[in-house]
Length: 194
Image (cartoon, rainbow, N blue to C red; front, side):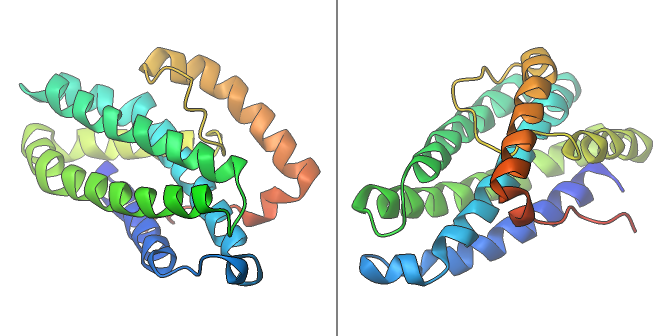
């Protein structure tokens, strides 16, 4: 599967979660609504997605496009803001005002970030890279996602090399914590190869 198809399937999954979470109950009803499970699903999906983009996708954008540094820097800035919001969700609980605020901020930011990638970055990348290069990048993304961190780690630098080294260690710790706590059952499925 080529990189853009793989990322589009991830984006569609996240957009579906954002649609549900956009109307999420607040206050006392939030805890009984299953909101925490859905947010955990979102945190896992987004943590994995952003990690693999920082490891492989944004370096490819930097290398392939004349304005790749600017586009990647803008995207990574959005992703860092998203990770900070996801960490607030990890640290909070449904019904708390700060949790609800972080959730609504993430819904807006997530949609804006996906729109930026798909409308501004992808068309340029599709023109600049061959289908073979996009397929190779897609394979890297797919493999990396299987071992990516499942938590946001907003303090980890977004540099590709740091993500490939420290991110691997963080992913191992995340997955151990997930298995011990039962959180691993909340991990949404990855896009399937067609």
